[in-house]
Length: 230
Image (cartoon, rainbow, N blue to C red; front, side, top):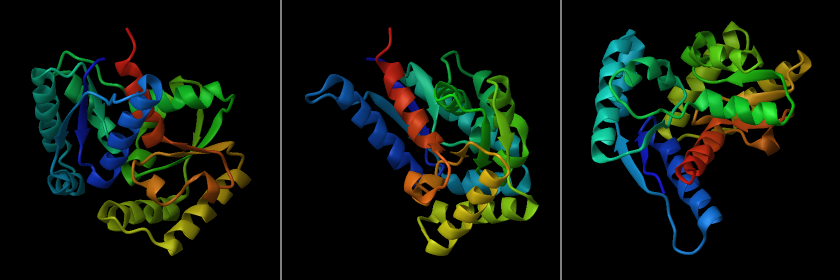
């Protein structure tokens, strides 16, 4: 079994889900007393959030590159970044390590394509919705990406940072997300990508009028399966 280098803490609530899925998937495949071999570096999210708010992406690239290098030096076979937004920095992190990074967009796109879907609605942080670092990989995989309008982009982002990252799950916010998903369906979306690792705390398949692809669940499961591949 390979050793997973897990970059977590962004936020720690969603990292719990990663840890649980990694271990449950290994148990599902191997049974008995098996569990995943994981090395985790849990960052202080307050530092990264401050850098995001001031546009200091270089500062975040330094923090995550150093963390990934520590995981590599400790014996990790590959890196799993337990957040969507920080995949913006994958090219910077890759310059500082020699082990691969399992990309969250690639694993999600592969699953959607397996299910024969093409036009996807995307919800995430403002950075993930309005920048191309995830969308470009989705498009290269043959997916057409749709995002909310400007006002709803702000709403989705505020719920993530002001509520979900602080462990708050509010019914009023769930209804707003449901409204946005329904609007995407009306515009032709065939499914919705929950492109922030916290959104799964608020929206599940039962809450959505569209098929849901939660990047957290997909990414974590594929990370565990990769540990068992030759």
